[in-house]
Amino acid sequence: MPLALVLGGGAPVAQAAPAPATAVMSPAADAVEASSEARALRASTSSMIQRYIDEYGDRLTSAEAARLPEYKAAAQRNLTSVVVTTRRLATLVAQGAPRRDVVAAGRAAQRAHARARSVAIESYEQARALLEPKLSWIEGLQALRDYDEMLSRFDEVGDRIDSVVRSYRGA
Image (cartoon, rainbow, N blue to C red; front, side):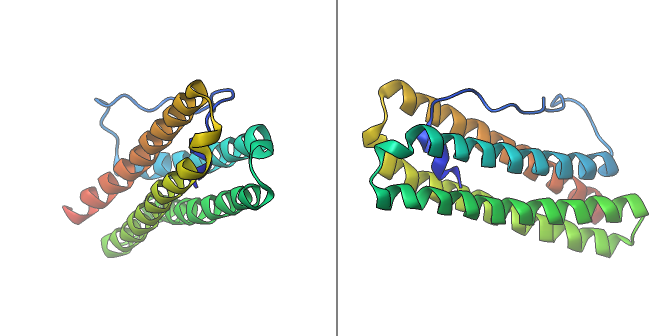
């Protein structure tokens, strides 16, 4: 998924400003924010990968170029899983579901998040190997910046999910 991130270049991807690190949020607010951030991450990642396909696809062989849409599809599948599980978590918290149900949904969201993040890192490494020789130094730096931003956004989603689970496990 971040495989396309390696491609770098282009306009920065718009993203929502994160909540201040010092802000203490309720579990309900964290759950809603995790769901919202997961949706935004999925949209911006898809947009970024498509931008890389459009900007750098012509530098690749047809076999290499065919792999980029595969990376986009993998990113969408994994991030959709995060979106679905965080939406379920937010719904259960909002409905005042039993603690065990919220914790189970939170753990499912944690697994989906960990899987999506792992795939993103693996994809980035594959894309880097494919594209690095074809990018200028500046494009490579832009790709690294995009990758760092994407990982930071993944971490924000994961932190929110973890916060909800901690709140309900300790209750």
